[in-house]
Length: 276
Image (tube, rainbow, N blue to C red; front, side, top):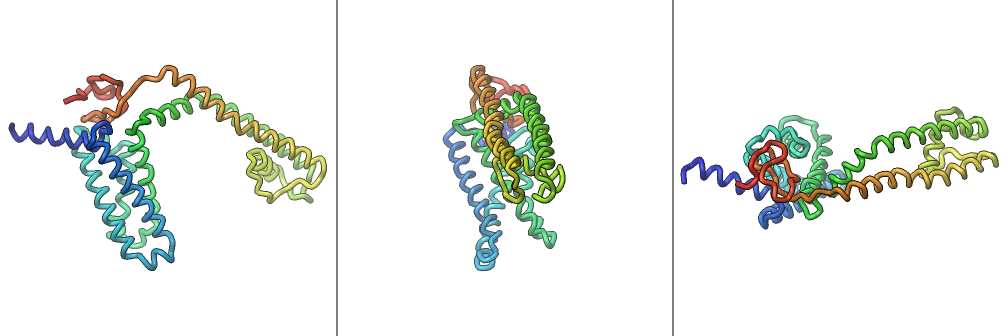
């Protein structure tokens, strides 16, 4: 076996461990990665508590460096295990991996970069990478497709809600007046939206009997309005699930695209052969 073939084989094995969830090694890698992601999020939250950070700053800093180095090694491994590393680097998860890892290194170069600690919380988004490769593969894709298919209906619905809020807010401005807190139409529309969504801050409240009657109608109407978008999306999910195509966790060793059909031999994105 020559050096080129040996190099190719270990890259394939590394790709299977990092990107595949059907193998035993791939599942173990995902579990370990999930543990470190959750641990890093806990470290970020603890650092934000002044009393804890003051007392355990050195310990938290060491833990953060350990996690950062491990994520750096994982990031490098993902780059060298695919044939088109630039595609991974510029992908959504590739950018998230970089942004969630680089703040710790920037703190060594620049002073006053402690605010970048919030970027490390982006590591939580990496959980979706693991969930996408888990047994419920395709569930998130189905939801995204349903939202995209329902965007026109939802947009029309939201437009109707905005118009209704403007009309009801204007009516309340005329009924209640400035003496009851409804000093202008925009503020009255704000009250209508808060009431319609059942949030109810209570900073503005109708005082007249007729205004309270209108407020009661808005509250009742709010329950029906909240259920409409859910019904639209649920209906679309039910409709698309009938035509659902079975996919697996096979990831292309060239471009790292996943979600291929069962028994597929070639990548649907770049055409590279899946099974080496």
